Length: 537
Image (tube, rainbow, N blue to C red; front, side, top):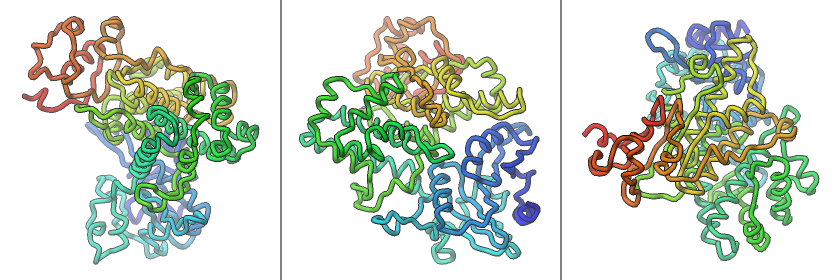
């Protein structure tokens, strides 16, 4: 380990600059660093993490992981290496990772998936993602200095933009098209389009197709969520049905029996289908959905696409929620909220270093007045669970993650939202369910876990009508991205009376400002995305 420290110190990667070793987090490490080490880095077997620390008035407010460091003899393109890369890329957390052996150091781009070199054999390669291969004695590449990561300018370096000087860096430059979110989103949108265009063949209504896709993603997530022995939460059901995965269950006509078993095990109406829905499914040819789950070819581009590039167990749950957002009806004034913006706002209004101040009694009620897919609620719920773990650590000097009872209690007692679209409510509940399941080990999922249907927490309603019927409620935080457009969204004078305002108070009858007034009525803290001209002019 001393040798590793000596090598890293040549590029200023030291404990003073944010280096934390996973086997013994320094007592001077910050709570969110310790949380990340235990919740994520250790689960991917990292030896150390380089954090970028953010300061305010000389005090560290929060930290962001930038680099994972592996101190082991790990052969490039080995099965273990590919598995590590899949998890790191899917997690969307870090920029690069170092693999340091006894004699060499290899540095890999963590922002690109493995290259597919043989779709039939499902072979992947990581060779083109290697940015540096050097002996330990010679290595002192300042492009990977802690000072560069500390300023957040790693991807802005000239080498990433000069194809002649450094073609290797150039082909590895940062691009949104390489993110797991963007690739999965584009694929799902095209699959959905194909399924909708085949409605006559499927004999399923378009809204049912959306629901089936949502269920498929949730089941894909459960298949990927494995324990230390490689077992996932659905093995019991698959063994009973004599199938190996959900795609095989669909092809074998066992779609409904698998869902019925899931509905019995989990309760909460998450996997519930009405008799009408079941009848449609029984009469439909679901092979297109099975093909979607097997996915060797991206039907949009005809290029290679493999689930093997992804690890749903490590894909951030808020990204799944953001993907669902694209299933909602697109109306004028409704703007998509990218995950990075959601996380930025959560960091602003729910900073990790305020866990004791805001959540010492497990009470911090959050409300989204136009929740859409639930992307803000998912990120907020995730932060509440982080707060719980940080508070426990600071009180007990022991790091543990909340168990299923705590996770459910925090969800039911603190997360609320409304939306006028019925599909939005369904998607929000699914997204929050995945967030809950993401925190549990597979064995916990089958140990009498009964999901709450969140009927009282997430409601289908017009916010202003809801407000009149719930005027006595108060929330610690109102957050969201309300629609901007006023057309077809009349708010009655009676509804506005609750807030002490009327329609004539708003320039151009601005709809977003009415949400803002309502949010201030209900929330101690308000964080809404609004059009700038509505407030400034």
